[in-house]
Amino acid sequence: MRVIRDATLADGRVRDVRIDDEEIDAVGVDLDGAETIDADERLLLPGALDVHVHFRQPGAGHKETWATGSRSAAAGGVTTVVDQPNTDPPTVTGDAYDGKEAYADDSLVDYGLNGGVTESWDPDSLFARPLFALGEVFLADSTGEMGIDADRFTDAVDRAAAAGVPVTVHAEDASLFDESVLPGSTEDASAEMDDPRAEATAREDADAWSAYRRAEAEIAAAERTVEVAADTDAQVHLAHTSTPEAVDIARDGGLTCEVTPHHLFRSRDDYDELGTFGRMNPPLRSESRRAALFERLVDGRVDVVATDHAPHTREEKDADVWNAPSGVPGVETMVPLLLAATRTTDLTVERVRTVTARNPAEVFGVAGKGRIAAGYDADLALYDTTDATEIDGDALHSKCGWTPFAGFEGVFPEWTMRRGELVWERDGEAFGNANGRNVRGDDR
Ligand SMILES: NC(=O)N[C@@H](CC(=O)O)C(=O)O
Ligand SMILES: [Zn+2]
Ligand SMILES: [Zn+2]
Image 1 (tube, rainbow, N blue to C red):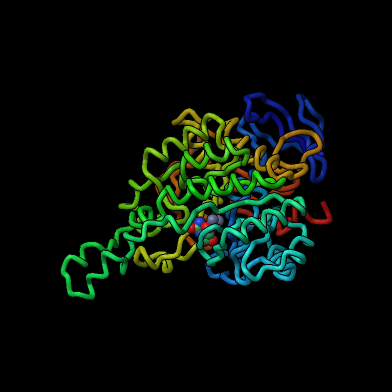
Image 2 (image 1 turned 135 degrees about the vertical axis):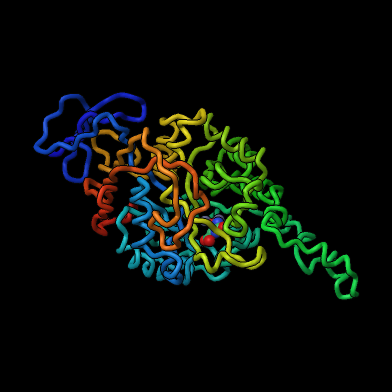
């Protein structure tokens, strides 16, 4: 058996962690073992579970593949990812689920696969598969145009409740988007009458995306989701909540919620730097809303941090604000950004551990993951918190080759272990094997 010697755990205790094949055998002091990995009192965290990624296969392997996405995860201390259904074909039938699982064979890290809802979904075959969750259920169109109406949403939540599967919701209400911001909107109609003022009304700056998909649209959709959930036994989770209001609505309404690193570390003030590379759904919010969201991360009101890792190529993103695709990468920089923030804010290492590992495993009932304790999977990552490096898109491993966090400090793992196997060693840039497993699969 192998022993990781003198590791500092998130709560500050220094312990040995003994590993028996794929599992943690014991956590203690002076443990015996045939082989020793010295931690030298560096920080050992449970491998993170990122419950919201878009790895793009099938259908858009030019943006990301399971091989590149899972490498990016491993290099960022993430040992489990959950893929979303807006691929091509969308994961809305049993066959589509099976097709995606064949791609996930290339994954270095463990994974879950969500099922989605469209007009043409097939709930019977879909719920016959081991779904991680039903979701993200799109209440408004995003990449993949899977927005559904109110009746289908209620029906989907009812079916998920009957199947005992949690539901995750992309909560934006498209009827509340501010269409006056759009080119060709009513103000702009005067263009047809040769009114010179028309030119001035069509916004082309990247911040127009935030003005268009305004906060009120998320807040209203979060309220509606609480109402729908209240009428059923369904377990409902709000994906990527971008406003403090939606976090509070989720808590008060008995839902769980997740926030993304980009909504925690970026705001509308950053569009000058990011341009359309900062376009995503839900969009960046005001600096005051960002700060209020961060406060809720620090004090425990946010349940989960997940990335909504949504890569698009540079060429695709380099378009005008109305035509650029929505989404930013993030799986590799989530834990590094949060750990770096523990050095400069009130965020504690324990909170980082809780929102990236313990809570996602608990909220979604992932057995054997999210903790460093005997009997749990040996999903681990080692960090030197005194060694922050500057984030650089070229040095990351996503196929998209860019990051919205360029220039930020990040504390990256020295190594990452997934079920006892080293899947990333920073010295030498070495990756392990594609032995990732479905966390809801039969071989668990
Ligand atoms: N968040 C995004 O802006 N984009 C996501 C879809 C989504 O999560 O809504 C994508 O798949 O590109
Ligand atoms: Zn979404
Ligand atoms: Zn998403």
